[in-house]
Amino acid sequence: MKLNVKNRIIKRLLQGIALLFATFSFGQQDAQYTQYMYNTVSINPAYAGSRGHMSLAGLYRAQWVGLEGAPETQTFNVHTPIGYKGLGLGLSFVNDVIGPTSETFLDLDISYTIDLDFDKKLSFGLKPSINLLDVNFSELNQDTGQGTDPTLQQNIDNRFTPNVGAGVYYHTDTFYAGLSVPRILETTHFEESSLSTAKEQMNFYFITGYVFELNPFLKFKPALLSKVTQGAPLQLDLSANFMFDEKFIGGIAYRWDAAFSAMAGFKISEEFLIGIAYDREITDLGATSFNDGSFEIILRYDFIRAVGNLKSPRFF
Figure 1 (cartoon, rainbow, N blue to C red):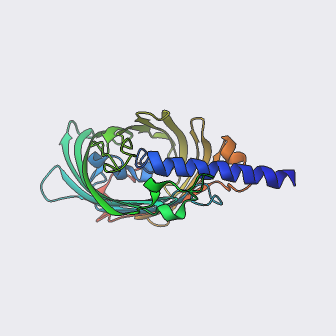
Figure 2 (figure 1 turned 90 degrees about the horizontal axis):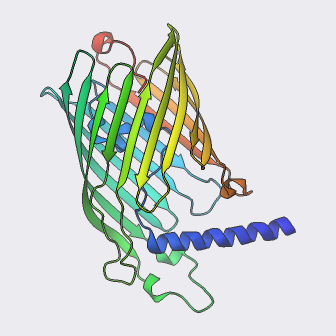
């Protein structure tokens, strides 16, 4: 009985947090990914075309499974080098749902690559984008004991805002590093209401990783993603992945003060990769009985035209 009461109290607390989020914090954080290393173009437009051929990827993430209104994200992207030397082009779609809010992003990714040396490349990217925001306030429990909040009675339907992002990406055959800001414009939501302080903040990303060839059949890749957002804690994702026989991938990750993750991948063919990940929160939220962790799956297909198109399969 005590456990049930405790769970009800925690659920009430989470509902209050969700209401606070919906009221004051729309868009402050970009969608979160554990398998960002296979989804780089979503956060850095300079990555577009860097694989040397057309590449398609689709990702689905369910966060905090078992918690009503928890985040869900669907992502699809395609990018490729194009005819003119050095240019890359891509298209990204992201749908991020949190409780009563739904944000849809459609991004155009444009990159230009400079060959610094035989295997050293530096790319610059732009990410013009559009955003559609929907908010269904009627899904919230607005009863505070003093009636409902009049500022939360009118839903938001397909509010359109443009944006632009930028990034730089450097890579060799075994090393990569990138710096990016996917959304530069700090959009203000609720301009016509008392909630006008809600702004979409810039998210600064830094990614890097290195591939060690331990033997002809085994590769090891440590990687790092850091995200800095004004008014939010620093996010650090540290990961370590192994690839065996160019087909099997396994690894672990740690999100600083937030979660541990396990990852696995399998290359069904030279072109087709499937990856899965599971996160377990180490915060108080992760200890609740109705939070079964976060799950993520990604499918990627590379249109490799010939065996000689790449020296060896890229691990990033």
